[in-house]
Amino acid sequence: MPVIQISTFKMADQQKAEALLHEVTAAMHRVTGVPLDKISVFLTEVDPARWADAGVVGTHPEFQNLSRRKAYGEVSG
Image (cartoon, rainbow, N blue to C red; front, side, top):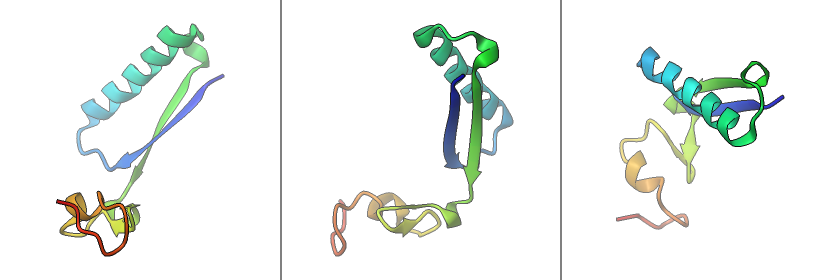
């Protein structure tokens, strides 16, 4: 029984969240042949203040740029 966990920033649009759950379920079924009733998918929505990429918290004003860096002291461009 596949259990698929998706972690993401909070999703404001309920229809998009449901579409994501549907599409991931459909892909698992299509690729593996596992019956639909055996596939579980869930979203874990994380507040940006509790998420970090490259050591930069999601609420940081320069998150988009700094989260792409490869080393401390480096600024992505």
